[in-house]
Image (cartoon, rainbow, N blue to C red; front, side, top):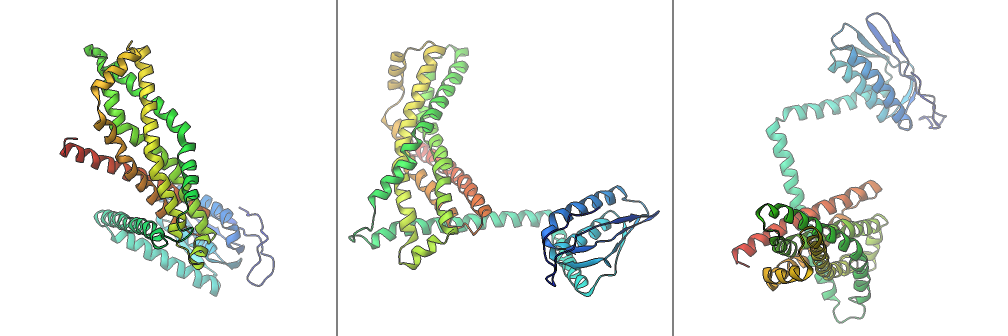
Amino acid sequence: MNIQPSNETADNGAPAKAALLPVLREDDRMVARPEGDWLVAESGEMALAVAELEKELAGLAGSKTALKVDLSGLESVDTSGAWLIVRLVRSAGEHGIQWELVNAGSHASRLIGAIDFQVGEHLDRHKRQNALVRTANSLGRVVNTLWVDTLMGLNVIGAAIRGPQLKAGRRGSVRPISIVHHIDRMGLRAVPIVTLMSFLIGAIIAQQGAFQLRVFGLEVWAVDLVGILLLREVGVLLTAIMVAGRSGSAMTAEIGSMKMREEVDALTVIGLNPIGVLVFPRLVALTIALPLLTFLANMAALAGACLVLRFYAGISIEDFILRLRAGIDLSTVFSGLIKAPFMALIIGTMAAVEGMKVEGSAESLGRRTTAAVVKAIFFVIVVDGLFAMFYAAIDY
């Protein structure tokens, strides 16, 4: 079982020797002999070789076969190589196979011993925790994360409000052009997708409503159904979710990229408030754009419902409008639009919080962007539920 040589240099500066893992098989014994330089550059290939040997050991579980790992041919080893050797012998032990590690040099012996100790400590600690403790541990981490996110969100909102306020009256403190620019990006350019999606959702709800009410001969009530449902709940909720996925993720990626390139730190160094410069215009733009998008989404959804009921249920456009006017009032329309600014604030705050958490890697940026969208959608739905209970309590 050979591993291709690499261009990595060993500790003495010489070109690294090929990492090999020859395995000799005798009657009741296997001798694995790592050779060459087991360095991090070859860790992927070495891991595959060790994984193949682990599969073979798994097939020998319960037999009298013993494993001997002879390190006499090992030229040099780093943490990754030592960890793979520890993993190999521990895997043998888990399958009930007797193993021994022989001819280890002083450096390899100390490194393997240290890693084995740490792995053992981690496993013992994990085993000592029963299911209840692990569940409580996970729950505690989630609660702590929510608490930290809440504090960071309040800090972002406070800084976004306080930053421009401190500069009120000074030239250039609040840049309207930046707000208009973000309204264009977050609002105007989202109109086609929001309108199309809302049109389709409205048509689907109308078709399903008419189909179910046809059993009772009450297809005309589908107009009341779609009118109330779309204007009070679905229109604003659907728009907020689409904006969270489109504009919220873009906002996190933009702020996170600036954080990675240390542009946020540069703003602080030159005396500017990063939240006021980066987050405030986006929050204002989102708070303006989302109610407008919600109104357009409501109109598109009603148009889709009207069209479907015209051809599916035989309800003319005039009858649809008359029935809709009788079924809803201004409170129905505003009950959905009132939620939009709050949802915009949540989406923007979550995006800013996660963007500020980005560390110096692309993997961190992707993880934070995903977290921003998921958290924003979650809190948008929670707020929608709270509004529903509030409206019910005040009979609105």
